[in-house]
Amino acid sequence: MPAALRRVYGSDLRLDAPVLYANFVTSIDGVAAVESVPSSGSLLSGDSPGDRFLMGLLRALADAVLVGAGTLRATPGHRWTAQHIFPPLAGEFSRLRRRLGRAPDPLLVVLTSSGDLDPSHPALQSDALVITTEDGARRASGRLPGTCKVRSMSRGKRVDLARAVAVLRTEGYGAILSEAGPLVMGQLVRQELVDDLFLTLSPVLAGRRRGDGSKSLVEGVHLLPDKPAWMNLVDVRRQGSHLFLRYRRA
Image (cartoon, rainbow, N blue to C red; front, side, top):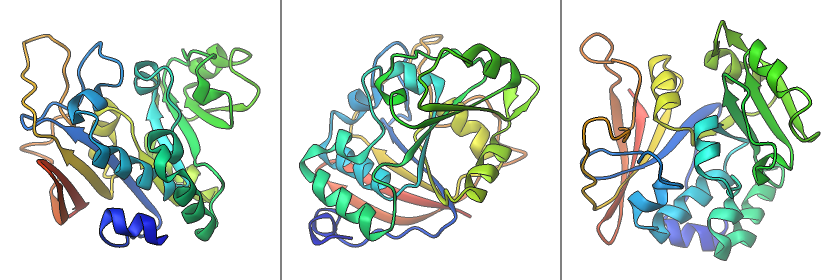
C-alpha cells in the first residue's frame, strides 16, 4: 500500500484472491441495521473516521462491490467508491488501485429480485451491473440508465448468489467486497460464500423493540444448531473505543 495508507492502517492489508469479503458495523448489542434510518451504518458508527477510512480502503482493494436493493434505497446519495466515503485520502486510494492494476473504481453490482430500482440514483449513472431474476430483468429493462447492464441469474423468484459470484469471478472480478445488508449476508453465509468479515464494533448500545425492524448482522437464516458458521479472529485493531475486527471463515 502507499505509505500514507499504511501509516493510517498501521500495516499493509493483504487479501488472498479470489476472495469475497464483507464489511459491517454493529453496536455492542449486535444491531447492524436500523429500519427507516438513511445510512444507518453512519448512525451506528457515530460517523467514526476510522470506520470511514476502513470502508474506503476495502473499496480501494476491490474489483467489485456488491450491494442489495435495500442498501441502495437506504443510501440515496451514495457512491460505492473509496474517494466518496473518505475524500481526504482519495489520491492515495487511486494510487493503490493503479499499483494493483485495478480500474479507477470498482464495479458496482446491485442484487434485486424485483428489479425495482430508482433509475435516478447517482450510483447507477456510471457503469453498474444489476443482477436480478427473469421477472426483475423484464421490469428493469428500459428503465435504467444505458450505463447499467442487467443480467438474470435466478432460482425462481430469488437471485442465485452462488452463480452470480461464480460468474463475476470468471469475468475477472477476483476481489469482491459485500456491503449488502443483513438479509443478503445471511444467504452469503449460509452458502459459505463469505471468506473474510471486517467488523467494526461501535461503542454504542442500540436497543431493540419487538417489530421495530432493526436487524442483526445475519438475518433470514437459522445457522445454529445445525449449520454453525465458525470464523477465526485474525486481526484486532483499536481507535479510541471502536474495535476493528477481521475474521476468516474457519
